[in-house]
Image (tube, rainbow, N blue to C red):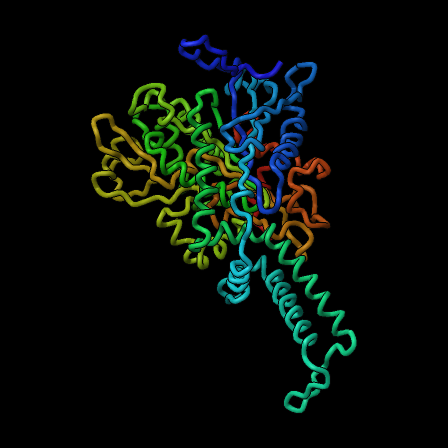
Length: 517
């Protein structure tokens, strides 16, 4: 049979009965699609087939049809074109989901809110990409593509000029070549190519323009996209049937998902408050201890896994946050249940020119806590807060100065609060990319994120898992035709059973800290 969270019909004049709770724990997996003209549900259906139905471990539930799924209407998605895909309960996960967990897959669809990018906006964006200093303001992994973009642009302009100049034109004593009798063939071809390019740009890169650049004509579209995403996060987060949320972004959707996480964490001030003497505070102390160590030794896999384990412990404690609740037990505003952020084919690797004015500006934004990183930025404590940290066991007695990403209220309840950009204390970030070679082998759009967003991020280069790709792979991260080793890495990153980091990444310790070449 299907799910058990049914609302029973009420008798006339009677109070509606309460919603029946599911007999199994539930978790939500939200997939944020990337650029393009996706139809609603296309992305999520393929993703479910790979991540759930293709996972022999998670689906080992002993049932006759272990991978069975249902597609149900769900008004929380903000569109009747979208549906929630729910699964049977999973195999047991000892210590986390002892009886298994049901998975609800949601697609955050936003293509309808960014359609119709004006050609002038794209031309402005193209100008922004072309006219930049390739030495100081261009990541080296896109230099070849930047050169190719220039060559195509120049070729297009030259062909257009040669097609319209009169025959036998002499300029400064030089006979300018022309197309002669082929002139009227070249012009229609250029017009056809231009029309096709315009349409393709509108459907794909036009959405990059609409979302990544804050211009007066884009503000409304950016707000509509973010409002839809925040509403879905808030609704699911407030539903006490869910014990965990996993956020997965692909392509441009990773930028949207990253910003949604930052906004959502910042508004959850009650969830960020932790009292001394709790399980959550013990986990916080471990994270505060490991953060400077992992920054000093970013290629130490043991430290990275220790950091990830601390994130898991803190999030689990924050998900059951009643003992810390400022507004009373049972208030969903006091808990945090988003556990993982998984990015696939992410252009965040180019954040220094997509989201900032260069690397110095990107670093400045992170220091200013405008853009969260992992580990979070730590701030220097004033003398009173330093003493409170010593009293709480954060530092040894006699410490003269210290930096933390949490701060004490110095109130009678001994409350601490994680600052508004410290979301990656509780959220694990896993980035999967495919090293690009010669532009069209691998995924030029993607790349590593550890150097930009911190050593708490796990970077997985698919080239190290299954070899160099021989075609463009930006849309193939969960393709059922992809290499089985690649799909296994994706399932480990999503981690439906919420297994400990050491177990999930056993055998991959070298790969998770490998720097890109």
